[in-house]
Length: 212
Image (cartoon, rainbow, N blue to C red; front, side, top):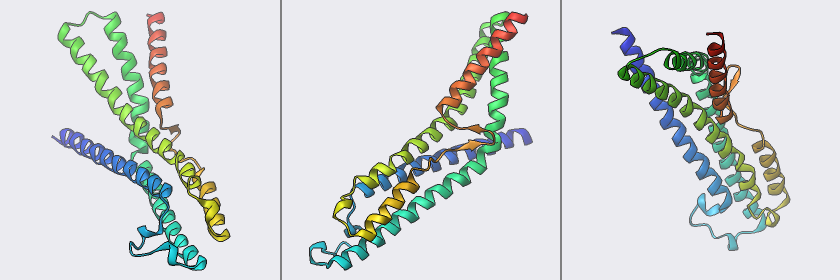
């Protein structure tokens, strides 16, 4: 019973993590879209930029930039918290699943399992690969969405702003160019790592086949 409860708890954590990652992806897209539509009326819909002095306009633009920075930092903190939460389980999956997939393929190729056993083995391999794919795919989405932020900042009409606003935007572009990657201890999460896992399992399978 305790084992079943632990599996249920882990499944709930994974589903909650997926919901959080999906919500964070939406936050990235919202932040990118808002940056491209750089309007101070988002802070106050009753503002008329044409009636503001250059000093007042720059002040409101700085407030909008501060809002972007807070949202960006909030996303980075969330990614780091999520990384700390899943780093150990994903690292264990990285090691265990590679070995299990290798041995299951070896058992299918060498042994004579029944059709039912072969079916359950394929289902087990598919489930394990899907779990790994979910982690690495969402980590890749986070990285790619974050890579779009500097272009979103640059796509604003920055050449029309006052010098202090332009300097602040330049700092934001430089800061946004720092890649936002997720790691599981010594392993970097991403589609490339998932492909390396599959290649490693296939290499171990070939080695076992030659030894056998």
